[in-house]
Image (tube, rainbow, N blue to C red):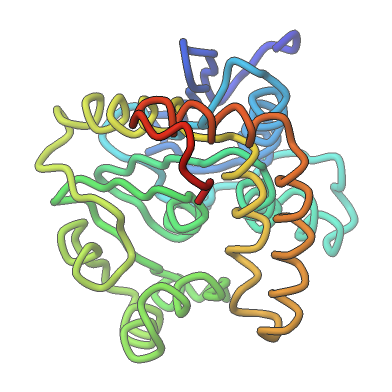
Length: 263
């Protein structure tokens, strides 16, 4: 990253990229600068062959308390509200995390509200401490926010409760309703949980994961036939990919079944 970072820190670790929201004095509330920096770091991580997964976490006593209500600051689209919402808001960040070909691991603790919860939901692996506060407080603030992701994870009834009351749920409750992949007992366990998931992804097929991620999140929005055609295209591409032959051979060799048919 040649351009200095203001709101986050970024590093390429041995098998993953680490993005840390770094405005602890503001509970890591998002600004346009924060969003732009995360998107640029995600693009750099996606281009690196050293990176098998991308981790996003927060510094201080919160993961992310949402958008910065005192002002989001300047953006490249200042003066053009529509393009600012499309390209500079947390909506654009959710799209970035959904579209990147590598798995995204989000580790949440403390306040994870509004846009912060949207980032957590945009992760492929969603980690949360048991006492994390996960919520959409827009009704309390007179804000109209997005809920496209929430209803798909927790269902209509739970989503209505969370959206209309604005009351948060705990990380432990998030696991029960399908909002969270894994609950971590407390903040001290976040590093170990991240190490577990990043090590796992470093052993898996990047091409396979990238291809399946492209179809996974479209499952709610297209017909079965459309999805099947998309899957066939990715499957046929992978059948001719060098990585597939290498991984199948290694899998068979490890089991002493070199003459067995490929799965």
